[in-house]
Image 1: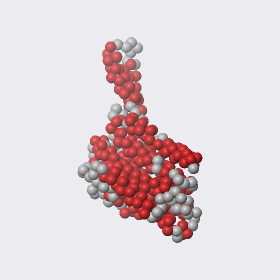
Image 2: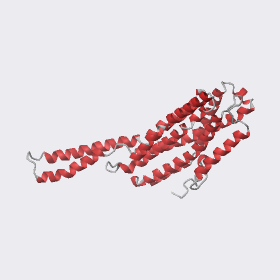
Image 3: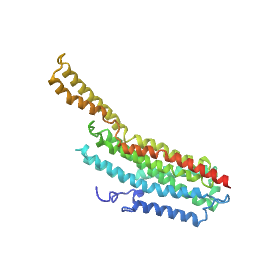
Image 4: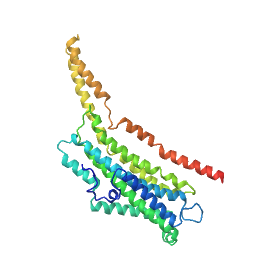
Length: 334
């Protein structure tokens, strides 16, 4: 891989992220600042009932866009690294891996057409629900044009991000069906687990932004429910797709190895009724091997990564609880 793996990419979501060590941070900060200034310039940041949007809704728009674009860039970069770490497991599959890496960073024209169409339709549908079915009447009010446009942009970008991550998960799913599995070296397969965990964490982070919608407003469920579903359902597939084939193959490989070693142990121990030093000597490496096979993990996860995932899984519920408590305290103070 080159120093900049995205130099040949035609994927616009990757190209808009600035290069360099701090490129993602700078990109996210610029997106947040520009979008916030847009809302401020058009006078839409207020908690007054007569305005179109609350401060919480504006913060949500700024946070989700400033977060999802750089985090998608980071997950793609980690996926490319994980795939390169699997090169030794595919001694004759260098061309296949190179093709998969290229597909991660470059998309065909029909992929763009499909994702943009789905994102546009989803955004339009959500805006229609938000406007109680009267979207033409809502757009006749100048204050609703910017929220309408930003909602459309969020759906288009989120559809592109989720589609990209799911496609990457599918590619790792295919690799999992073909990779060499050594039950004594399951650590070599942890790149599959790292991709699954990284993609899942990206969606968890996106869900953590939704409680911002509760600030300064009586938020209707239609405001956040579609977004939660759009990130929550794919999260399941992002976690399972890269690791399920590997898990099944590890289980099968371990079972076959245990059957072989148990058969060898039975052959040696059944030679005679009286055990001797020669039998003990022959049994020792077999028993050690059986112990190692038995203790080998059946999932391609690093223990520290799984601990981090378990910790991050509680972040969205905690943010919702925190937002609800703040809203209660503010209402009580008023």
